[in-house]
Length: 86
Image (tube, rainbow, N blue to C red):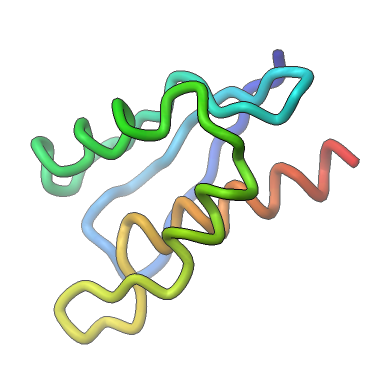
């Protein structure tokens, strides 16, 4: 299992961390800062799920007309991690 850390842009959370296993399944998704209830829920919902599927679902989600969201930033983090793992 590989661990990844990502610094999101233009959102309230300051850091996203997660693990990818050998089958590119997500584990231990955590956000530092941001909306605690919503971000804890995202972490629970994506646990053990296929990383690319989750990135596809969350990509482009907007929060408060920022052009991005914590979910969208997670999708960017996942795609970055998948490229690094390839």
